[in-house]
Amino acid sequence: MLKPFIFWTLVLFINTAWATGPNCSSILGNVTQGSLSNFQSHNLRRIDPQPWDVPEHGLIVEPHSLNGLETVQKTLSERDGTYPLIIDQEGTLVIDHRLPESSFSDLSAKAYVGNHLGLYNKLKTHNAGKAPKVFFAGQIRVVAGKVKNLIDQSGSFYFSPEDLGFAGENANQKLAKHNQQRLNIAFDLLAEMDITKESTEVKNFVESYARFEQPSDRQEGHVLAKDAAKFERFCRSNAACWSKHQTIESMLRKLHAIGNKSQITKYFLKNARENPVKNFEAVQLWVLVSTEGATELLSSPDALNPQTNRGSLIERFIKGFESIDLEEFQNFVSNL
Image (cartoon, rainbow, N blue to C red; front, top):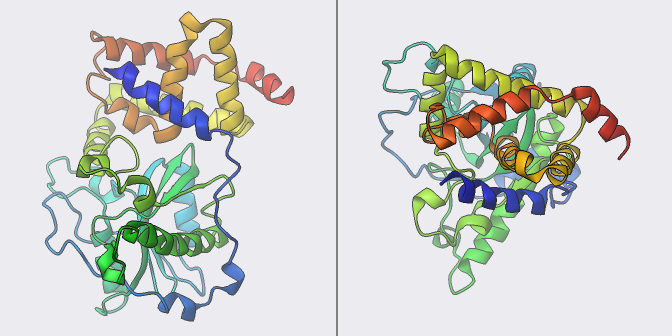
């Protein structure tokens, strides 16, 4: 089951590995606080929170003073994973990991998942009870301390075509175009905060996933946020699991300190061509780890059980990953 899954991940990754950055215009110079309020604010879609949702959480960055930005930047550089975020019409950012730090210790707590509703409630409290007007809701994925992508995906804040008066056969296309305007502005605001980079991919949720009918297919990545948060909470409390997790993340950072995503991919593909029998599985798992992170790899079924085919494959990958000759990789990058 694992090989077909990561084969298609590999195909997708190779198709995008040499992309130079997001396809969005640089319009921040023309963005003002007033222009954000020109966009219709999001309505809260999911009124009733789920039992696993943390009711209020998040780190706040204020738009004028940028108070709180240093904490956010430090958090992103040190901790991989998916971070839901919202931006209000004043330009205030609220962001947090899908497993907030407050959920680390108490494994019996029912509420442990960070989500947009919790961010909204945090901002509402920050505003002394005044309901925020949400300009943008989405999430970023961080791998090796770097923001890999930004997507306008949220279960609590989103538009349907009819919300904006779009109808007809091309209603979804109109919605995607409208959402892209918000994505462009959000990307540039985050870039001003040194959160998104030139290498950050911008993903339009409606454009990418509207064709999928099943909710489980309408997500960025292969693991639901709730499942990933639940697994990470377990893994942090399990010494064997957390050791594997930290080994993978440590090597990701060491490799990215030397080369970029494209260069690392070329290095793995070079080795695979030289010895395809030995290295093809490593390439497959590298694609998954570099695209979605250690939690997604280790939370897959049987990943922690070395007595299974999948578990033994991941065991071999981690040992091989940890033993990569960094000097050899440095020389490879220098010769590109």
